[in-house]
Image (cartoon, rainbow, N blue to C red; front, side, top):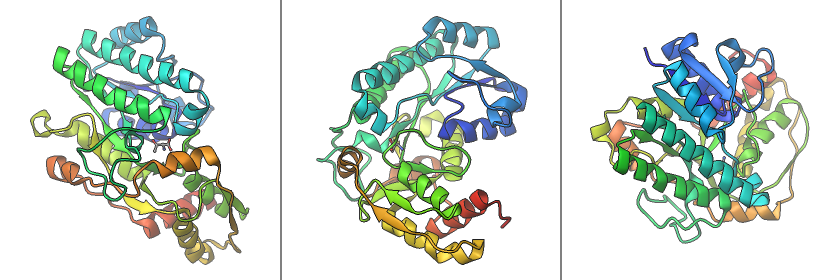
Length: 321
Ligand code: AKB
């Protein structure tokens, strides 16, 4: 049995990863934590839950020791748009909580999953098929914390032998939990608006292409990376991960093609680019080359835009597929 602790368990990734890890290891083996309590019915509430702030190093270490934790999934972080508005807080929260997790892992011999992001790339990274090894000069504070985080994880692996792994998540799309304060959130908002027959004003321009991934693929990628033999991993904490390169206009068109199947009348989208989030998106690649992940641990996405759209609309309109 593996004893697992998740930080940020109420967030977009945490919600679904809590479910997946409890299915795999057993409900009682997975301790979900966050800085607020789950509402009744939230997956984190259906098993062990503890209020825990990743900035509380002593509390984190005491919990890891008392619970005999062997793996930590560190998902608590401020995302790109919020980090741009609160750069000092983003640096403090994203970096100090990671240091606390790595220190606890070093002390207690835990394995760690610490996600990175496509935000590590910047304007001088190739915009199409951004390579695994390339310039990492981001122009957002969130990206700065993700590059620094990758390097910090490298350092703990080299210095102390901590087995820490991570993926450069693209924009993640899911029906069960909303993202909080990211640049790619428009995609999830668009599905919610369509499913409730509301018009949607998109905060990115219609032709802004970014790499996206459906959450079931992202969760599977996370588990597959953690399962992979260490010796196979050339970039343990920083694998590029791709699903589909999408624009707001392409998602809107895919939704419109499936409206009839879900008895939805029409879907109206207007575009009102927000300068901060548009600038962040303009600094990120249009698409990502994930050949290293495919070679090293056989990564393969399962969802395309059509299949994801049908599952999103089914979940949000409570249709059965
Ligand atoms: C964001 O938009 O900030 C995140 C990310 C790409 O890491 N979804």
